[in-house]
Length: 197
Image (cartoon, rainbow, N blue to C red; front, side, top):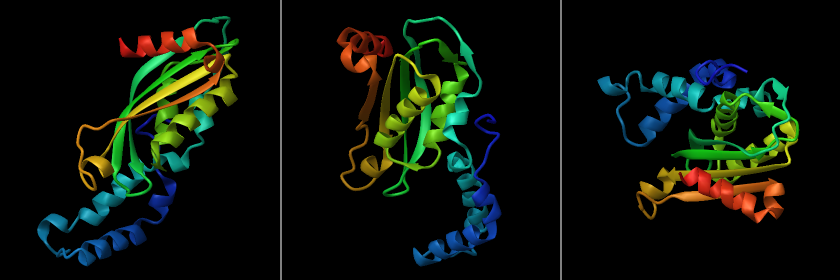
């Protein structure tokens, strides 16, 4: 899989003219003058943005972990503070935050940068935070077959901060717990204390 900026949504590229036309129509329908200087290139800019922010549709997230390595490390590995940006599927408004991943290998590991690629592949599509959290955990279980996985995702949702109840600064925290993390309370506590440091 390519790097974060190396892949784009292929569907958007193939449908560029139609998407630009629809953006132009939306601008008209909300009362804008699409011939105004500042809006002349907006449909093209929005379409290019869609290629990037919806790039996850062109990637199999399982491939994001790339080549795995045999390694006899049997203690917890944590990759924390992975920044993500996504789009709420309910309002198409941005939400963003940090992902924290902990896993206990059972003989197989992935390169550390691959965890950020996995987060990108899962989050760059219309999403809900709960699904992002579960998908990351489930893919790690499927690809690495670890003893346990725990994923915590923090998010700030503009659909809640900038519209509706308008509560800026509100954060949503979700978690997914698999394998040994479900039954081992001290392991969960260690993970949670280490991601707070």
